[in-house]
Image (cartoon, rainbow, N blue to C red):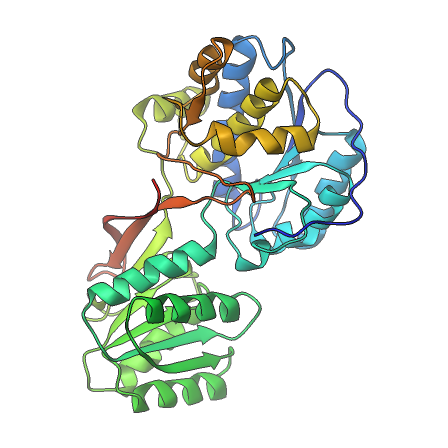
Length: 390
């Protein structure tokens, strides 16, 4: 649960809900940024065509996230100087961790559409942070379910030993153990031939049937290929979402190894036909990659402001849990606003499906995409895995 901050300032407000967005439209994550920009344009249009929030059109101001924390810091500083009431983004966990403290100190609400890092679970946010992507703590539980479903009693966990991989791997080990499976080997490694070699030796010595791998898009494929090459045993691998889109420089999986790898990732595309049609009306080449996550951030902020009758960020944040659990289901601002106007409780479930957010701003349920790799080393979906109270 998020911890209280001690330096939050009194946020100055006027009569117009102003939302900032920090999105990458250049660099490696540009597809996500462009997709989310389309979704926010769609959402703002729907909200303002419905009369806006508390009788006034909302405003959206977008700044460039870029592909590093320095650019993201400048973007957030610009939005704070403008006096926004809430910020959507940055999209990457490192960039959000570098900027969230400034937003909290300014008394501004932040919604993360894709930053899933465990380090954000206990960030001192004073109740001014929420996300529409499941935390890696939930992804760890999903990985544990894949391990448990394998029926194996010999499991190893190997992980990239940094601030991202270590806590994620510890959560995965705890979740696997809670499922009743013993983790026989827990091995960290760092990039570099010597560390990878030592980790491979330790894992192979444990003779696991399943290896759970928590790593990034470069080191994940490296360690998996190295383990597979070092043993004659037929090992299966359970991986986190970063492995789904290996870095261009990463070694591909062979035709025999790929099908032995399964993983989980947050659902990347909405299932709503109406939402997809709306995106295409904005951009005929829209991919929709994680677009629904940004759309959800925008809608729940606007709905919470309307429900609270206030633009104060803390008042908005306080309304969100009650708007995403129980009540009449709705999936957009216009449909939800009708129920609010009739004094009915609503349960906002966006175009990506069930969305339940608790008082700490975290999702209490999540749907993950299960994936594997075909003989050509391309990732393919093989179903869904649902967790929580959804």
